[in-house]
Every structure is written in structure tokens, then in C-alpha cells.
Length: 191
Image (cartoon, rainbow, N blue to C red):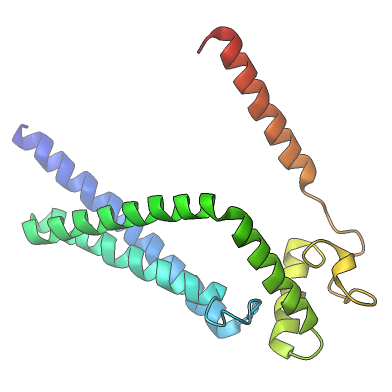
């Protein structure tokens, strides 16, 4: 590789990592905001640390550290920082592949566990103020009611349930129909 190509690669790597570092800062900032304002509260009482704020803080911090290593390693041409950047990216890639496989293998169990946790959370709606705030906020923002609908609530649904919850099944069915049609077209053309 020529010197001009290496210099271009150095600055491209620097600017992309700088962009990712700023994105990590924003994600971290949103995480701190959600942690302080606690609009979404705790929905899974068996996992009290699994809140939107905590997840965003962890993700934002990881992005910032990795992007910092890439930024500084490229601009200073430091082999140790660049190798650390590479190793962290490799670990993240392997973790994502492992997580995707585990989510695929245990999809049914995860769905059942999430539904049970959310249903348990609905039962605590009137006794736990944090749960009430979390459900009210989520139902208002997402324009939904409960886990499966108004039937999840014993008695009448809370005031935060919209009078006509929007169902997003139509968009999902359009996407699935288009996907199937693309597959049929590809098979017909022999692609």
C-alpha cells in the first residue's frame, strides 16, 4: 500500500471512530437521562437492574471506549491501541453471533419468560408505584394496552390504556408479504 493510501485509511478510521464516539456519548447521555427520570421504571421484578437507563449506559460506555481506542490508535499510529481496538471489536462480534444463536435457539423460552414477567408486573400495577409509572408511560408512548391487550388487566384497564390501541400488524403483514413475493420472484428468475 502506498503512503497516501495509508494516510487516507488512517483519517477515515479516525473520523468514523470519532463519529461512533459521539454516538456513544449521546447514548450514554440518554441512559443517564432515563436513569434519573425513571419514566420506564422496572417491568421485570426478577431482574430489577434491567432498566432502559442501565442498558443504554452500558452500551454507550462500551461504544465510547472502543471508539476511543480506534480514534487514538489510528491518529497516533499506536500499535497497542490499534490491536486493543481490533481485539475488542472481535470480542463484540463473537458476542453478537453467540447472542443471535442463543436467541434463535431459546426464542420460545425467552418469549414465555418475558410474557410471564410482564404479566407478573401487571399484577403489581396497583401495589407498586414504580411499576404503575412504568406501565403508564409505556402504554402512552407505544399506544398499546397490556401485554396481549385489555384482557390482561383484571377489571377495567387503567386510564393510560388508549381507547383504541393501534395495532401494528398491518405493517408487519405488508413486510412479510413483500418478503415472500421477493423470494418467489427470485426463485422464478433462478437467482
